[in-house]
Amino acid sequence: MLELNFSPFPILQTERLILRQVQLEDIDEVFHMRSNPSIMRYIPRPRPKSKTDAIKTIRMINRSVAKNESINWAITIKGNPELIGIIGFVRISKEGHRGEVGYMLDEAHHQKGIMHEALVAVLKYGFNEMGFHTIEGVIDPGNTASEKLLLKNGFIKEAYFRENLLFEDKWMDSVHYTLFSK
Image (cartoon, rainbow, N blue to C red; front, side, top):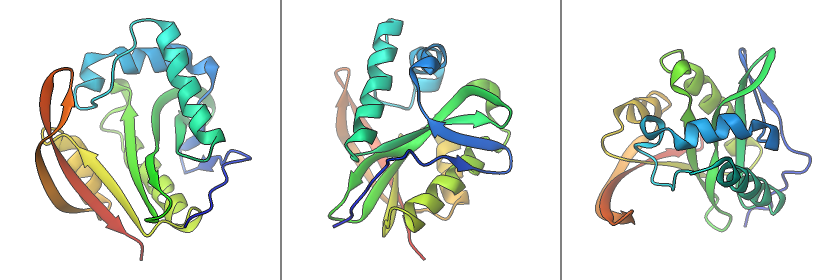
């Protein structure tokens, strides 16, 4: 079984990015992204109706980090502390040495290679520091941008599940991709 410890919080750096802990000071950006129907259209999570809801989301993220149950990073551009996205392991199976990666990025930063750069750093951390054997990406079948990102990073499509998730009274399909440690 994996033994995880996210204290102190691991800050990751790439050529252009700093991945740091999500903070209460990120409330405006978190609210903006999570309440944006376009950004959330493929993410089956409730959208915040107020900044109070966004604070609850940030606190939930950080409680999970403190309990070593999951980890999410704020994606920032070097030299600018503003959160432009979130990436992390949203589900972890310590027994299975497996994590599920999830991510979102503000639309102003799409098509710039930012999520690819962040994902490479997070995958490296998951395999090398956390000890994962496999990392999974679970996406909506309509999310072709996410599919391209996963395939570009070596993920293999393993399964298509029909109507396996009920969200807001609607049955949804999901596609599962897996990346194995080398």
